[in-house]
Length: 125
Image 1 (tube, rainbow, N blue to C red):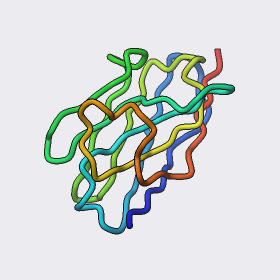
Image 2: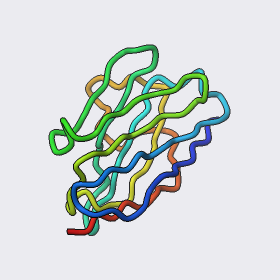
Image 3: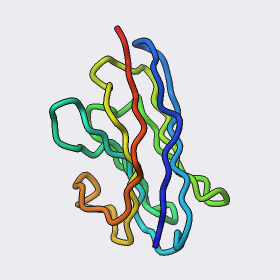
């Protein structure tokens, strides 16, 4: 079993930055894909970014490419989401997710086995 806990959300003005953290514990060695999702008000959960274990690559939604960066600190079992040039439309609850399956072809689908409780990001104009 894997537990994940997000932190780092908050309120910022448009153009600002935030860094989200996802600390994992448990059987983390079996996880192959780590991702961030978000749920915008009134919408379904959507994939934001993902990173494959062992340097297998990163994946981004078109809406965040060039602004967000996902990274992983193996020693700390932590995945980060650096968010720059934030826009009001980035306002959402952000969730960390991890799964034993591969990222490729499915990272943007909310089919992950392990989810955090979410952290709120609010961007004001």
